[in-house]
Image (tube, rainbow, N blue to C red):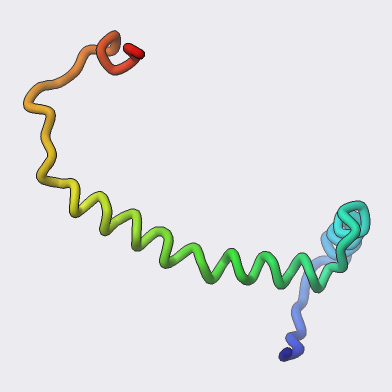
Length: 72
């Protein structure tokens, strides 16, 4: 595991440590979780864009009314 040095406002660091402690985690663990989510966001967004592009052919043929869109 690689060490990284970050700079942040002391008040934010203190609040983050307090929250992590309440969640029974370390600030390092919270950062690692955040970093993993941050890295995974790009592929998820790309996957969504690709899905929407692949569905571009589907057209309803007309505009639906609010009542039709909310019908269950």
